[in-house]
Image (cartoon, rainbow, N blue to C red; front, side):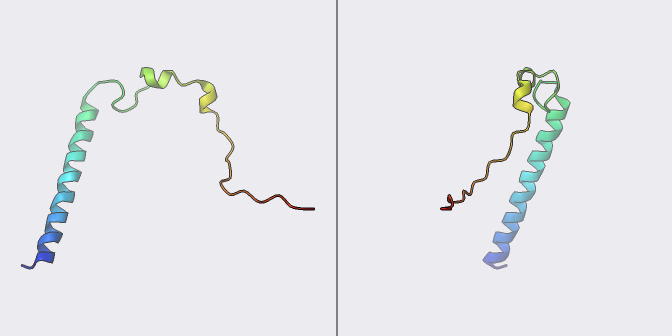
Amino acid sequence: MNWQLLFALLCVAWAAVALIRRGLRLIQEKSSNSCGALGCDSCPVDSTASPQSLVERPLVSLQTTPPSDE
C-alpha cells in the first residue's frame, strides 16, 4: 500500500463521515418541532418580512459602458 492509496482512502472515509453526519442532522431536524428547523410558516422570523422586501427588484449590471461622445 503506497501513500497515495492511503491518502485517497482517508479522503473517501472523511467524505463518508461528513455525509453521514449531515444525514443524521437532517433526520434530527425533521423530528424536532422547533420553529425555524425547516422554515415553518409560523416562524416569527418569516412573518416579519415586509411585503415590499418580497417584490422582485430589477437587476443591476456590474459592467458599465463608458458614455459616448456624440
